[in-house]
Length: 464
Ligand code: UD1
Ligand code: CA
Image (tube, rainbow, N blue to C red; front, top):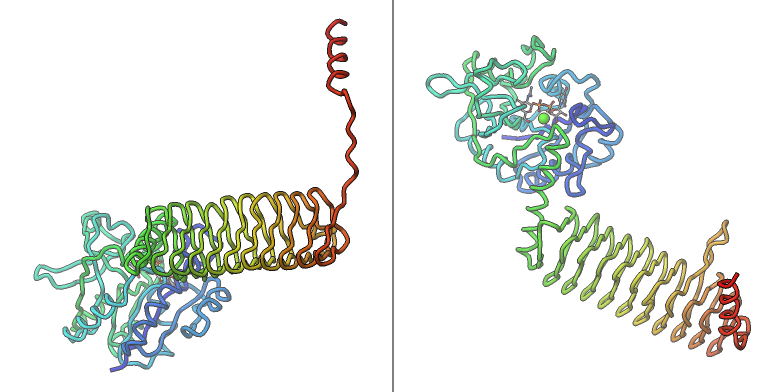
């Protein structure tokens, strides 16, 4: 027996009120369609499913790009309903059995689909649908059963009679069909309903009329079968997925003082004994090593954080931080910043495309852009690389062991040699050789008796 999967993902998602196709909306940083495809790939790896096909229609370019080689795309030019979507895919299908699921049901677990397949085979049914009970079934197709308890048909909410609306047993839109039974039934579907669509759900009644066996696996988990139709559903799914991700990392040895304020993207990896303090957001392909302390208040995107790193109140994007680095509080590390082992970027410091050498420190109030800072350098408070002349960006090189006086301006391009020193308050526009002192400042003038003179002026003003 061969089983293939067909994901229905062509709909516009009108209820999302979005320019983006529904399945391109993200949950914990991963698109809905990717969540579904990843689950199917898990089943493919277990040898349960062969081909994976996806029916797409709205936003074809973006969706097919997102799917890439993870499934073959079938285009449904005109969206005439879930039944029509399967009709469009029919010429491609030649497996014995077909798993149909929707692209807007991203929380479904591989284990639940396996269970559905077990029930399907045990029952020897022409179709087995995945159902669940909901205390609020609004929006879902209701499962109608006869007196003996057998399924009669599914009624869509828009077509239901008032008494049918109170039924809490619903269709989740995940089914396994015997393809030989489904294929001819598709031709008998009609669009005689208030939406003028071909409902896949109507196939069940057609099969029953032909004497085919229709079975159901009713799962108690009413969360994973959530179909996302609106932004509110999207937020619900996000909350569920966030809890799942956080629990997963806690199981693997990550401490979270307040998991409800920690947001971890689907593709993030975190090492053992790392502590995530409140208000931490980890996004994209971020990797965090072991024994780090992140937060309170940190947003880290697509970055490599090695072991024993401490980051407090900071934004870190596309950066690499080696072992034992300290960042913040209140630091912004912009793309291309590399902080080598044991270095420190402190309070109110911004870096961009900058290397901070081993053990080097930029502790306070600085901007380091397009800079290459060697090992063991100390950059005094308020120092700034003047890297942009309005047209081009220029590099600043500060070599090993240099000591940068507070408030040094580096008029780039400029090089500070090994062990060189810059005097506080200098605007350095010429290279400073190894071991030299670079000073650039006007001589200080002291005007004696200033306080007395100004006092006399004030007294005069008071009298007049
Ligand atoms: C559908 C089911 C309903 C079930 C619910 C579960 C039908 C008629 N109704 O309703 O019984 O309770 O899912 O979530 O099947 N799509 C296409 N092409 C189309 C129309 C839809 O590919 O022409 C895709 C959509 O992109 C979506 C999926 O099919 O991923 C379901 O469509 P949607 O409009 O969300 O159906 P529901 O009203 O939620
Ligand atoms: Ca839906």
